[in-house]
Length: 120
Image (cartoon, rainbow, N blue to C red):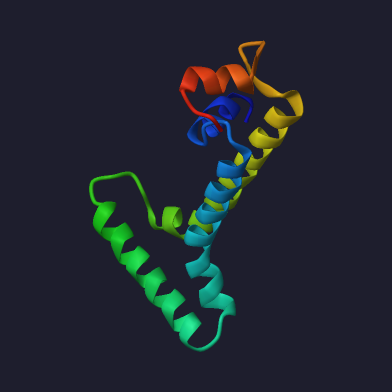
């Protein structure tokens, strides 16, 4: 996981608020169909199942000519959770350090934001 920190935080322009919002959106949109299909009731469950079936159909259309197997689709919620853990770890470590460590050098957020042109 060590090499992922720089790339994870660049996506959010080194902003903790953007990180929280982006990660929550990712979790909701990627996990809601699976979780809702299992635990929701009534119209919400039907909607989650419908979205899950559309995602399944999309998977089979897109996967032609690729290496992806059915296990890729079935394990997607696990992949999403692992990626979220990676994002959280990278963000927490970087904020505890006050910046990103890359190739043994600490780059403070102020410098990174300035170079990126963001205000974060």
